[in-house]
Length: 166
Image (cartoon, rainbow, N blue to C red; front, side, top):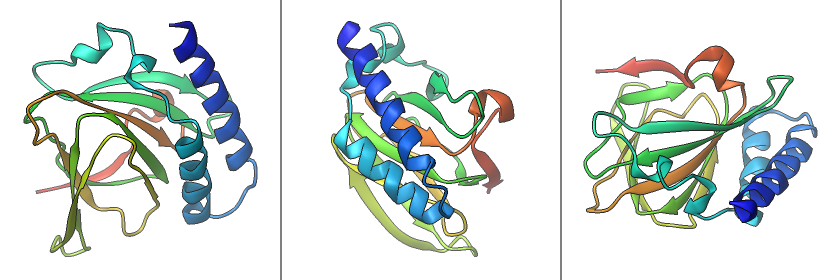
């Protein structure tokens, strides 16, 4: 656990520096993604109980919320078959896969599929609205764990999703 706490502390400090550059959302997402690549922890950033996930939905665990609301860090646990609805975001987002594989589908504004990719452990990506409509699924047979960094305090706003689509 001490290793995870040190890793989280280092990651938060690095993200804080990237956010403090005060650039646009797309550039901030790329700066934060660079820092997450450099400080990507292992799945042990979550406790063993947290890594079990939930049978009824994707489990989200708030690991850090910046006091000024500038960003938050969440660990998400995806059991096999779990998926999000198609959605977009209220702010920039950076995702790093810690274990398992996440399948991501990308859509345009008319909800036409424009791409898909499998994100294995170690994969890090960032994006910002507009152009951030997607759905994530765990299509594998094992639990997938990812770290999500959002450009807001999720504990204050409740969700990073701006809209859900049918």
